[in-house]
Image 1: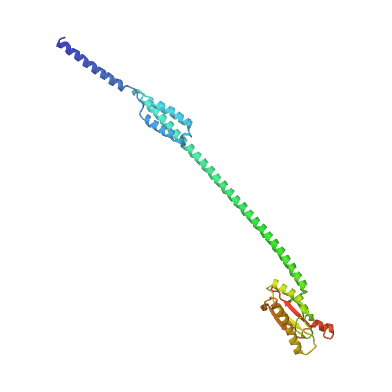
Image 2 (image 1 turned 30 degrees about the vertical axis):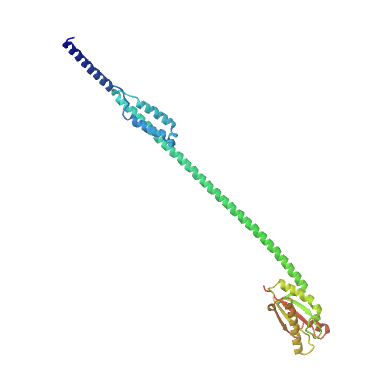
Length: 294
């Protein structure tokens, strides 16, 4: 093969390579591609789909948006640019609508939940208030019942004490007067003309001791009296000595001397006529006045 032939072959190969390159460039330039903006729309949709709070609110809208985005992602040729832009616009609107509805519905759900929580809280508060009121009423009723029972016990005790008090007064044969209880002891306690207590005197006096010990707030005044037989000075001394003898007996039985006073009144306060023996016997007496501290 001569040089001319070899040169021609090389030249032809170079031309073929250039033509092939131009053909490939032209082919690439005219290959369909996804429209501009479709990637951003896909990202918005993916973010919405991944939001658990919002995605569950718009299942239908998400499906429609997905379809619109998939259509917007389809490759288009250069002469379909307007179509691609329109598809991206529609897809973006679909995603925006889904986003707006999801946000609105989620907010409504939240408001409903808050309203339910508030209502539950109010119901709980009312229930607690009712419970407290019921507990207060129960306590008040219990307190009232306890007070009634205490009052009944106190009334029963007071009645028992009053009955016991009256029983002892009856046993003493004492008489209520403005001065207090008056117990009259006849002259049988003493021998004639004597201030010494006789052996049988302890019976009545012991009843008095028991009464005074049961009612320690009560004081006593002992008054000695005589008839008009004998001189005034003799009767004065005798009446005082008899009162003091009773006082001594009471203190010996454990009654405090601070609670007792004794005096002689001679023949100055007779309760019967001294003209008869029976009258004079009534006038010879010792009176014990038990005061009423109330």
